[in-house]
Amino acid sequence: MSTAMSTLEGRRQAVYPIPTMNKYLNDSAVERPWTEVERWVLVTVLGLEMVMGVVGNCLVLLIKVMCSKQYSCRYWVPFLSLTLSDLGSSALIISGSLLAMLTGGQTSPWCEVVSLLKFAFITSSIGSIAILCVQRLLGMPSSGSVLFVVLVLTCLASWVSGVVFGTVPVVYAWIKYLYDPAEMLCAVFWETSYSDMMVYILCAFSVCIFLPVLLIFLGSLMTAAGLVPRWNTYNEEDDMSLVAPLLVAFYLLCYTPFVVSELILLGKQDLSPAPYWLRTLSSVMSYLDCGLNPLIYCSHRDFREAGLSLLWTSRKSFSDPILTGITRLNL
Image (cartoon, rainbow, N blue to C red):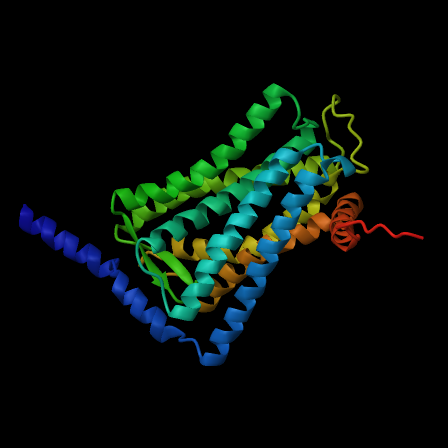
């Protein structure tokens, strides 16, 4: 019986070979090594994206805290969650990729921490946008004790779900995080069978990606078509929520390469990753979204004017003369 099982297992592996991680790491390095020019181009792009994300989102947080009364933002909780997610991704993930490009890789435990945080930032950002779209559809403000608690817990759940789904495979030794030059970051390499990988990824994507995307599409389409509940009589003419369609459009555009690369991985029974160029494009485009969102916020007139007034007030306060002493003159 054992001989028959061994023969069957040998045939299965002959049909669906399970490659090792080192094989793919070596293939990745040989497949498309970076030239010196390409490496410095990517370093420049990552540096610009990091500066745009960190500076832009810090200014957005400053405007939201100090100039909140100068513009209308009825749905401020998901906006705040999205800004924190973009800031964290810019400060930790993009900087990690930039450092990896300059030093030639990442080592444990920073490798695992950055990879887990990356998935958490992805789920939190898409969860925040989904909550914003549902809020616009239902007309529920972020004020009020009960609604505020519900919204905070919902945004927190989108953060926690990413950490949980990223941690469980590591705890049970299903995967290992190793540096992938194509993604300019540590990537997931599965050490288990194709069926286990497919089941887990489908569960994670269903909860963290597919459900929020479904809410985004339903909320956006129903709001655009005017199919809002009767109790939603709020006029969004001057509200920050007017930028929600732009946030949705650019988010879907920037994360399309990432989704395509994951679907390619699911479609290959030998667990081989997506093409080299697609993995690089998915990282660059997902990082770009963090720096574009502050520019999208500034497309709203009142928010832009609040930011300009804050910068002008700060500049004026430094340029005003300061009385340092009094001299009496006898005339």
